[in-house]
Length: 444
Image (cartoon, rainbow, N blue to C red; front, top):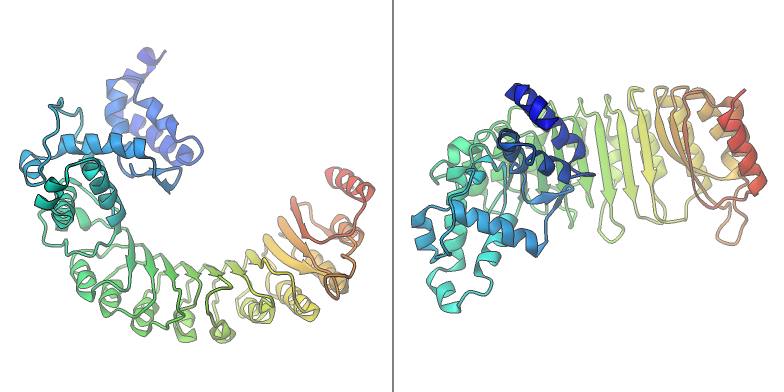
């Protein structure tokens, strides 16, 4: 059947099919695209460029398998020019010419990738050779090779060496859309990149100190869409923050461990539609800047705070200062303790300000049953709700009864509500759960 159908499909049609397979199956069924290579030579020719876009990833994660690196390094060495092999003292056994110029299709390069290739090349090699061709030489020559061969780099992890002057660097980096970087690196490296790259859309920063070079790079971008900032020491990065504040198209902001920026910077993100904050209880952080933050177009809010007393009052204020466009509110804490009055304040804020809400997670005690009722009656678009049960006074008190919650959902929940998740402490019987599920399945 393959021989009858495949040859008659135009190339652009086959490529569209392969693109769909690549996008839809990369994480769950990563071998699907590999199987397409076996259909025939033509499909193989069209599939290989997709497989080599991000060859170092498997199911969305960086590959660590020694078997993989042994195989791919062999392929990369076969693509190296003779002069590079000579510089690196690489004299592999005679190999057939590769069927494809594989490295040309690669769109992702990083220090981690280069280091993994070097480790594989030097494994089991006599130390005298390593002395002749130092690690620095390997690093330089491999970066030069990839930048000269890759037609278009989309994802770059900024190295500690200057790469902008290497042959082919300008051409392949002009189309860069995603950058991962660390602020401890020299400002000059960022400034060099700022002269080449103006279309970065996704920026991931390990942000533990300010960096004027990174600020210059951010300023030179036409349309940043998503920024991730990871900070372990709580430093406020003024210059980086000011540069981000000028990025009026920013849609998604991901903050990990510390806010890194002042409330004035957050307030500049008037088009921000998604805010994700992940705070580690072992890292110093200060959420007070959020008390004066207004994000009028926010649609998705996710906060994970591993603290004994997550500041639900601060979150409630942040929610109330939106313009009613929130569709998803998820507040997560792995700790148990909390003040009941904060539960009430938080649920009331959602009821008043989130009429378009579709997904929500809340904390519940028997003292906030009225607030839960108002939430379910008010948020008519609600599709998913997660409720974390909390004991009223502490660890030795009884868990809240689940029956009042079931009654509210059955009597006042809309037909759109399709998913319920109950977490933590609850007082229930099997019969109550059975009756609820039967009624939920066949609503009146």
